Image (tube, helix red, strand yellow):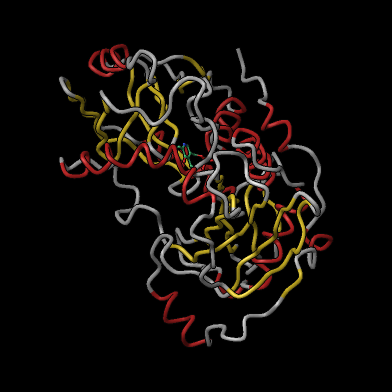
Length: 379
Ligand SMILES: Cc1ncc(COP(=O)(O)O)c(C=O)c1O
């Protein structure tokens, strides 16, 4: 059976105004201390992931009286927050991650931003945070990238990583949904997410800790899920693993996802499997794109429960041949081995994974046909 569009995919396909129309929706207050050309070039000479930030940030505020208002692009800088600020105590916050890419002709594009707009609202609903219009979400991205277009890198594998986030900023220690929220977008000129390029990663399959459970917030992009993933990640790193694969919290038998990426398994008969969206895993934009691209090539993609024991047996018998993780930051990353308490599986092949990576990055960089209209021009 082919993929039935999710609510997020349907919302993401609603029409939105182009950048020309949204430009100026967030009023530009230029940073008086913006980096000089030399400073900027120095900071961009050695691109890392998420460590350097551009001159500006987008900001707007929500209050009960005025809804979302005070839309500005202002100087990037430290925030001032009351120590009783609700987010610091109860973690009421949601965020997104998307990228802007410089194409060969110098133009700047982002990729499926309406999916991120729809998912931010989806996450917001789960955390009792007010939603925003797609026009506000896109307007903030358009305004910020237009103000800081010189920070968008062009080196291979580089991008301008955009991080929108909303948090409860009430100064109140009662446990309740806040009455004031701040929305920001910050941006980071970034090199490749994994310093070793396309090198396959070694994954620890976590038997004890889970990132999210049934009825929790696993399908919302909110800090708490990432906080829950950090201790197992620290321990796995100490043991020499690159990433952690989490199992479902109910049975601890089935694959969920990595701490920040969805997973796919490629079978020897050409079929592709990925864990179904159970509510415990994040509905990844990259996951959604890969399902659509593979199905358009006639590949059978099964979104289903994947028991760990079955996966191990499939690799041992050669029925499963490749496995990869995917997400905006790293796009597609080959998994080179899976290790758990009582098993180890080496996964030597990555040819098809590399083809999927090339296909998706080719579309993002304007080198392959964008049949789905996923690219959105910013500058
Ligand atoms: C937990 C988790 N799963 C999956 C993904 C992949 O989502 P996307 O492809 O939208 O970046 C991410 C990254 O955002 C994530 O944090």
